[in-house]
Length: 369
Image (cartoon, rainbow, N blue to C red; front, side, top):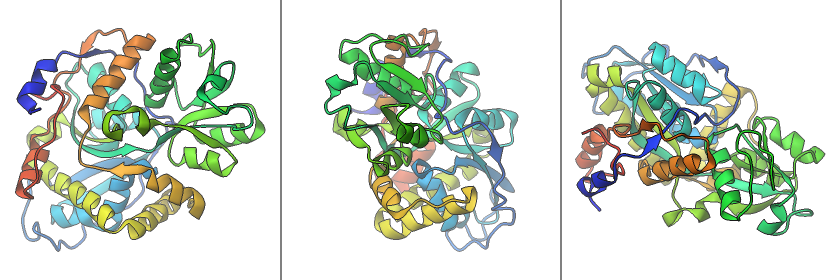
């Protein structure tokens, strides 16, 4: 289906109750990129319209495009003399706040905070300009207590945050089983416990929760503690694809510096291609960056399992964002009061892909008109 045909499906509504994947709310400047590196690629010697671009991302494997692209210098290669400054965030809300305040221009972020930021601003703050990663989310349970999906009834299952992407996915899964849960309190046939991902492994080990619907690497950490994967979320989606990380940009920056945005997207596309071509080195790069940024690298068994479950892709998998929003409405977390039309602007990505001889991706009818 072409983008013109997909546009007929526009008009999806959502509201600002969507929240971010929970890793806390503190943001930190990682100090990298404070001096422009020597340009070695096509952008060498070419002056772009901005002297600096400020990039935000998480110290998280699902942000591997940014981790690897920055470490390998793939963004700087495309940006030439434009200086890269980076800021690392622990959660989506703080990154959206930074984007709104003008201290971040482009960011890697999950779908729920992107939707939330767009809706709260009345469609004026940001655009989603590319995909970055798909998959990397699992329901991991205590296999002694839960051997099949029906055994979830009466159990305590954690998600990262009320209304975040994984929370909505679990609530929808429960509803499809015919069980009832109050979305706000988490009480019902299954007890949904909102718990920071950093605290989830300890809670699982202690037995205070019976499982968790969580992103990587938390899911693989639970498996390393003896957990069993009951559901790999990608198995619930068409073609096993759903968005876990997008690339967003400030609408102001996009309007003022489209050449810089396109250069960053060339770097993003190059990073994903490099990851696919060099999986072992890319995985090591990402773990080295986690060590540098958080002071703790992942053990080999956790890293290998987590990395293999994430698909790095330029495809925004836009239909999955629409579906997730529909699930949130059904769960009562969205009131359907705001239009998501225009949240995507894939024209800069289209230009990058076209130059590489690749086809464009769909925006599910939610692109700018």
